[in-house]
Figure (cartoon, helix red, strand yellow):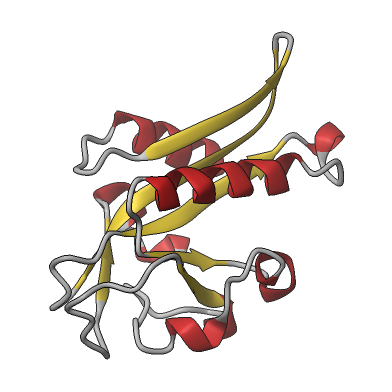
Amino acid sequence: MVAKLAVDLLAEKTVPEILSLVAREIETTLGHVAFSPVKVENNESCKASILAPLAVHPEHQQKKVGSRLIESGMKKLKEAGGNIVFVYGDPEFYGKFGFDADTANDFPAPYSLEYPFGWQALILKDWSDKTTPAATSCVSALSDPDLW
């Protein structure tokens, strides 16, 4: 399912473009992360993204590959003027990067969540027309309720 999602995201045309980062060592792919745009209702100036998916080859897990991919992506998003990044995942892992469920409370997930505590956000930079609560919506590749 993750591989299909990654392929679907790579094929999708979005504005801004999906940020896709790959960690490689010689001819081996170690991991991949994608950050795709998110629309935040009534917040036209907000540049929002969602981190999904993150995948690391099993032989290279626990070696900081995923962490470096996330850190690199967050840096690029911030440099590009990004305001907020969302993620749906393990709070213990993503909390290390500053993601927080309380920050996401004002921005409901696009779909019902099996694990609501996993919906988290990180504000990179506040924006002028911040209006909350504000619904979120994702690119079409992530618009499958089964992913949530």
